[in-house]
Image 1 (cartoon, rainbow, N blue to C red):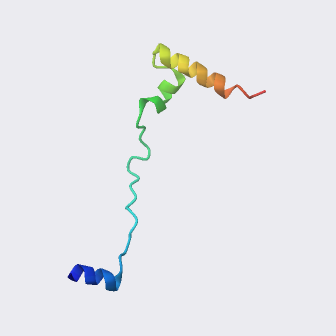
Image 2: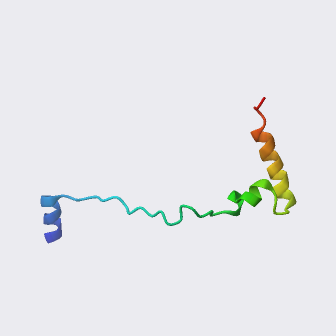
Image 3: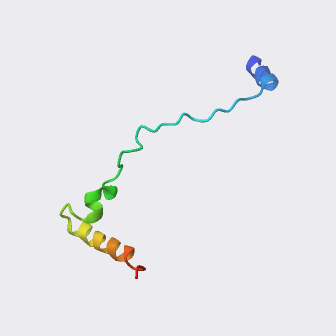
Length: 62
């Protein structure tokens, strides 16, 4: 009961979780790497996806 009484008297203190920025610069998936986005690594499906991305990016530009 000592812990319970202490909580009743002092209250509970909530602290934010520590921030970790260790992996901020790392790329987690291959799909976000430059070669895969541009289709330069040789895969046919990646080239096709890159073609669709450029078409989508240029769709509303006049």
